[in-house]
Length: 536
Image (cartoon, rainbow, N blue to C red; front, side, top):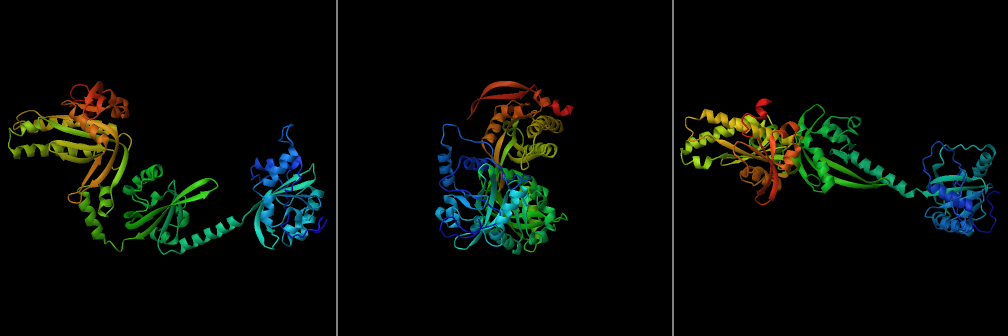
């Protein structure tokens, strides 16, 4: 019917091949088409651009025509339909807002008024060809085109077309893409700015996989973009730092506790060739709203500190710290980082030399210190490395260690218990070595508990790497309520033990624990000098 209108209303043009829907009077089949689209997956790649509707979603006691009129006209997306001549016979309120026409202006007019050239002139031929061959030259029913407003402005749209065979019309579902287009331009600008930056910028997703790696980052680390994108960011860290990274990520995502995010710190990084170098880094979180929900991206801004901190300065600071702290903690402390690390599952061991205080009145202070030094050296040399323990501190004759820090690992309860068993063997060796000066035989009381702790460095003068939390208090109570020559453990520790080690313990029942009340605990059979450890 060309570009003429059945009414005298004035109109304008649009894009090739999209159909339309809307207008106060609609048929039941049009409403069916609307529901069909709402229930349909838009990515039906193997279907033709033209679809047909078959079933009616309305029950017999509903006025389908009246209901569908209301649904279509109030739909939030533009809906337009045309007949086989290209004349518009539906044009809903959302279409009015997008195209700038009223329903009265477009009803009866050829849909080509909503299309820019050359699509406007070719549209009728396109319809005739389709009706004759039943073939479309478009493989996907959802596609992006350009449309034309009443004021002559062209704009991008995404359309989906349905062929209503029964009523001999085409129905188009339209989405304006202007906002998405502007967003893509903004994204392009942001990516250009990232690439133009003179400092390394690295972005990771919440799974710690690298998504952004600009040219300065490539230059600093020695990798190409293809080598790192999609890989875990731990590839850029030495092992002593990498082992903590997943834990930091999991804790932050779970609790929001910021130990790394939004803080500037000096950290150790690793180039592709294995070379370690110091970097100053600040990490910030960006939340992106997408159709799949909120994506969390963590962006690190990095400065290579190699030229700022000399090699000698780095080594000097690290050596001093490593004499007091675990190596990974020492490096962070030497670089002025705050140490506040939460560990969710560790095992804490306290030991005490039974009768040591009373013995101090029977021998000289020099002899007492000589024996105490021999005991603690035995413990240091015979326990820490073998059972992966971290020595926390000694207070008088008390010796405290922890399994599972600074690096958490499964089996920490087994390691702590085996260390406690071996302590009795080591103290027996000291008894034999110093029997000529000891006024009495020495025995050790050992207590162990498992749970969460906060590991921190406290103080500015003679700073101490220590652990805090209720789990520490319970471990101390296990020791003070234990028995000489035995290992006393909490129910929590017992449940973490391997089956072989559980066999060494008996249920002690409910005991009164200061500050905790009644607690169920376990204790080893008999004395432990010739127990599990000697048989391994």
